[in-house]
Picture: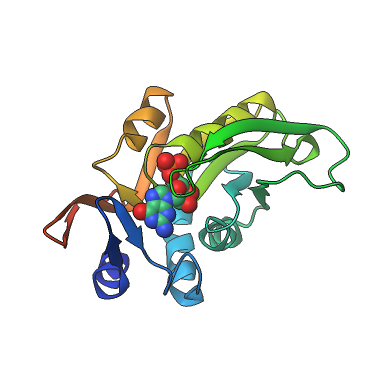
Amino acid sequence: MKLLEERILKDGNILGDNILKVDIFLTHQVDFQLMQEIGQVFADSYAQAGITKVVTIEASGIAPAIYSAQALNVPMIFAKKHKNITMTEGILTAEVYSFTKQVTSTVSIASKFLSKDDKVLIIDDFLANGQAAKGLIEIITQAGSQVVGVGIVIEKSFQDGRQVLEDMGVQVTSLARIKNFENGQLNFMEADA
Ligand code: 5GP
């Protein structure tokens, strides 16, 4: 997605060896117009797939996920990272190691929001080693729902995430694919949409 790549080049900051900071438009302050375009591209990519739910993980997946859900006209569910006393009914959980926080946490979705008839599109802001998406796939599978694909705003293709998800038999659609950060320069490879 050309518009997204241009925005990453303009506003992204490389931190250390392998982290990209995009808090100006995605992970802290959110550019809703760009998110709307992103949501439309994901919706177009999966228009024929019969998606019934969009699932993401809090917090930074929520913005692209809500616009994808709007464009597909289906509900959006976000997995919670912290247990909440209001979550009293059946809860589906998975353990997820956070790449940026370097801690493992239990993420959960109330089972009432997913059924055997659901066809799910997972959306997330970044793909690094695939652990967040893998945890979501585990939860969705526990519910008996089908994961149709994983839509990623920014994939760091030099990390293992895509391979992990494809090994699980899941299609990955990334709107920007970063090949490497070389001498502080960001290089893209061809994206999926
Ligand atoms: P994974 O689970 O694929 O290893 O990592 C993906 C998750 O870690 C995303 O949900 C995102 O929150 C966070 N993440 C991974 N890499 C980056 C990065 O380079 N920048 C930012 N801002 N978040 C990242």
